[in-house]
Image (cartoon, rainbow, N blue to C red; front, side):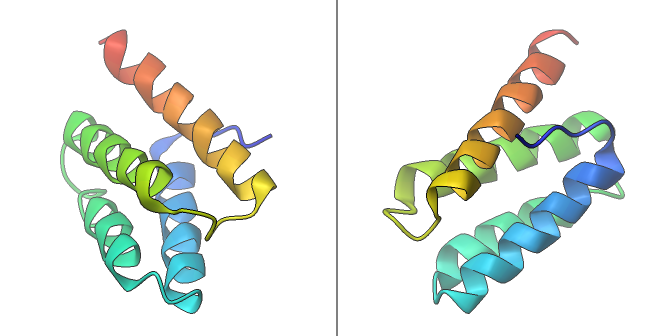
Length: 88
């Protein structure tokens, strides 16, 4: 199960997911995730919000591109983002 403890770990997760999607020819989804990662140097809330939007889009549109464990990790990361943003 994927558990992130800080924004740096989220950023690394986004980079890894971007690479996986790109390698599997999911170019548009890869670009979406990469775009969220570019917000890492900005405000924390903006980075978390953009990450949540991008990861929701991946979950909705990946259509079997991700393996079961990758989809489960993505769901856990989204839950963490929801908790972080809803408790601000």
